[in-house]
Length: 185
Image (cartoon, rainbow, N blue to C red; front, top):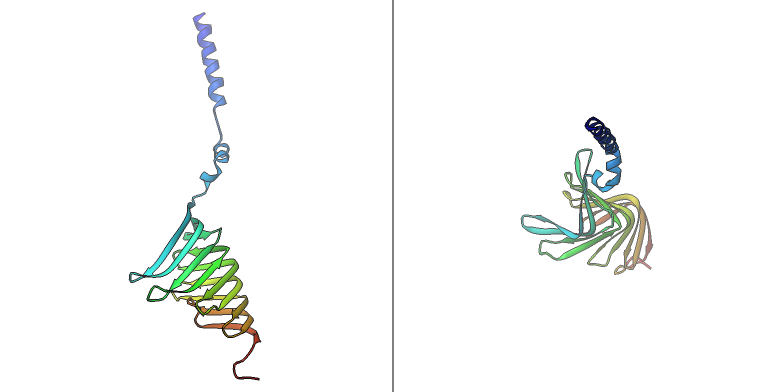
């Protein structure tokens, strides 16, 4: 009787233990957010400074930090709002986009989807994609651009654009324009 009880206990234990074995892939499927090495931050802002002077303030709803090909990246899947400042801490230009991706090591950001750049002179650039080179303080694109300058009564269109990040001076690649030329009748 004791031997039968021990045999029954042994067989029951084997059945119980074999039923508790799970594949790692089955466990990982239960926790998909655990498979991503990303870090997330919500409803925040970043300040970029040089020599204790704030140069840029970037606001976001969602920030995702991750590595791509060994490079640290910051993704802003819900968009960004950026203010660029002069040496007196006054905002000089603003950038809005529905999506942005930044290579943190290189200091280069690509903004996409309904990108708008405007300045204190009410000049406004609209495009689908804009690249910001932080080290050179340049903003550029090869995409189609529309630039409105209401104080000059001018609207310009073209493919390709390059400007200082304060949007005070700019160049358009393949240019076409509409508006008035001061002093010309």
